[in-house]
Image 1 (cartoon, rainbow, N blue to C red):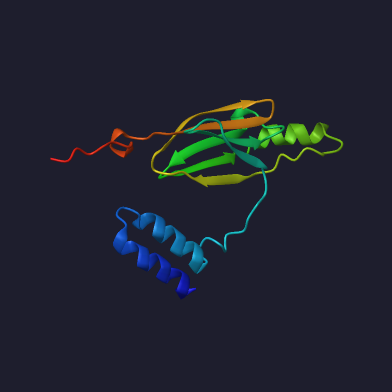
Image 2 (tube, rainbow, N blue to C red):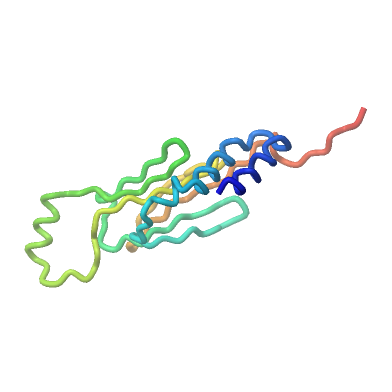
Length: 147
């Protein structure tokens, strides 16, 4: 794996401000992130809805907005289910067959520094979290006048 790390070490002297990205990739290549078990529940899509806008869609059939917590902290967007003991017991007493999964979950997404989370909406069993990439004026293309 050290050969992959040397690629990042070669790029560091010619880049400015990308240290956190290189550190992230080094952790991935070292296996820190790769050892986390992947869980495919709930299924989700990441959709580009415009030039600088995105939606994360999670299929959450059977969940209400009171059963879900959406949190954004330190560039990590986390969607998780909230266990409600009394509701779960009432539902289990009435259900003869459970074909719609309503299990506990936590799903996290790493969000870039220049992306803002605008909100979340649960409609027809689909949770949609809207994100927007905000490009500051200092990062927009401009012509530098030569004096």
